[in-house]
View 1 (cartoon, rainbow, N blue to C red):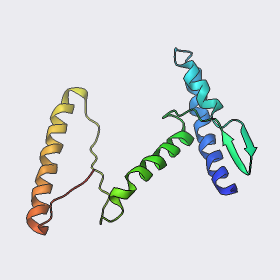
View 2 (view 1 turned 180 degrees about the horizontal axis):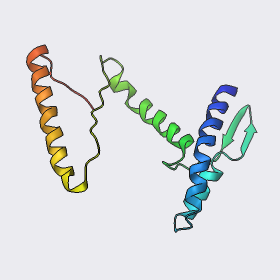
View 3 (view 1 turned 135 degrees about the vertical axis):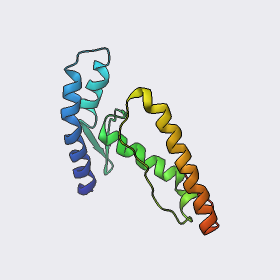
View 4 (view 1 turned 180 degrees about the vertical axis):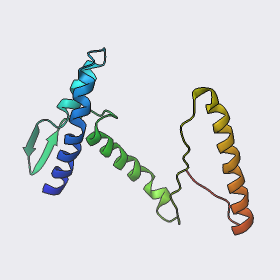
Amino acid sequence: MIEPLQKRRYAKWLTQPLALELLKLDNERKWHYQNILNCCHIGLVSEGRIKMHYCKSRLCLVCARIKTASMLNKYYPDLKNRKMRMVTLTSANVPLKELSGRIAFMKEKFMYVRRLNTRVTGTPINGL
């Protein structure tokens, strides 16, 4: 039980400086940043379990980890019996006026890779 709490504490430690800097902006989202600071602030122990309040913000690493885990559990039944590989396609940042052209270029190259893979292996690429 201690290890998950240590991981949560570390994620909270990483999130705090970001939330504090955002809080200094003093804009209309100030309440949101305050919620991030108060996320997992107090834990109540009852019946051998710890109950905490979560902010459910995408900026909070604790809540983002929980959301990621729940999404993985949601998709796991569909993905568990498949042979998969993780592929990440990246590109250098481009100016805004070149963005649509770069996206079209990347789509074209990805379609080329799909066709080539299907021709060579006989199995089309299927993915998320």
